[in-house]
Each structure stands twice: as C-alpha cells, then as structure tokens.
Length: 112
Image (cartoon, rainbow, N blue to C red; front, side, top):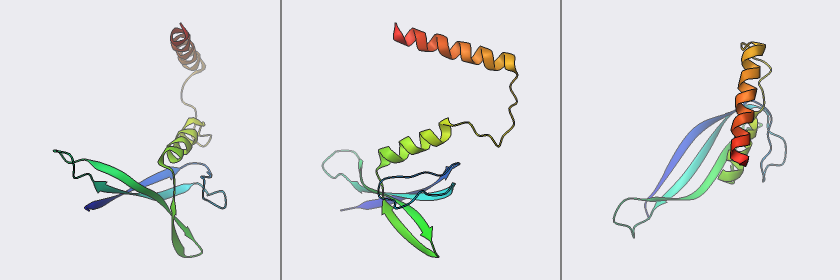
C-alpha cells in the first residue's frame, strides 16, 4: 500500500490540552504529522487519512502522540477565537460598535 506523510507547523498562542496528553501544553509552535494511504479502488487518485500525531518535545526527547484531527481543529478554533491581549487595539470605539451591530444583524437573520 502506498502511503504519504504530510507535516505542518501549527502555532498555539495559549496553553492547550488534547485527549491523550498527560498535561497542559504550553503555547508555541508544534509539528503535526498526518499519514495517508492511497485508495487503489478508484479510477482517480484519492487519499485516506490513517493517523494524525503531534510531536511533543519533553526533556530533550521527542514523542509522537496520536491525536484526533477534529479535536485539534476545535482547539485551534478556541485558541484563535480568544482575543490576543498582547496586540494593541487599533479599531476605534465607533468602528467596533458598527462591527458588533453588523454581527448581531447577521445572527438575527440566521434565526429567521
């Protein structure tokens, strides 16, 4: 069976915890490897995810911890959804109020 591995760097701005980790992980850059295998039964090339793992370096050793890609996605969304207090706010109060009003109108339209 033909397999391939894709590696990507992900940045967490805040500490996070995923299933399978024994402790809260500090903010930083992490490498995530996704292994896929080629599905031979189709008439065109298609890949199926077999495993996703995150590299954790502790005490000079690197461990590959299997993770759930959906849980990783949720953790990244939570990390990005929180305001970054280290960056200055550049929008004026008036523009923030207008953005909030637009967001509320869009939300109300979805409820109808």
